[in-house]
Amino acid sequence: MRNFDLRVFVSGCMNRVGFGVSLFAICLAVAQTKSPSTLVIRDVTVIDCTGRGPQAGMSVLISDGHIQAIDATSDLKLPANAEVVDGHGKYLIPGLWNMHAHLGSYEDGKRALSQ
Image: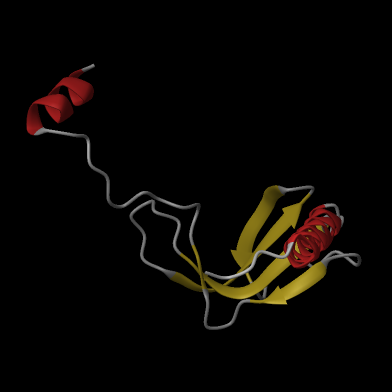
């Protein structure tokens, strides 16, 4: 049987608590970092889910957290204060989708979908 040393146990707990508090403080600081008020995602391929195919060479202007414009990169005028993100070779979709879901049993699913 191993001897239990309370001092070693408390010291280990304090190190873990200190690490946890430090990690929390870092996460809080990052979360409070102000995002840019104007952002442009430039030269991205947009999939807008309207039935059109992917639109390459597009730019998206986001201001105060809202999409203000989606236009061809050559046509979109960049605001002077915008942060620009290069989207070349990337895709932009209008949100996240839950592409796989279970509604329960077949009967539960029929009932849920009929309401």
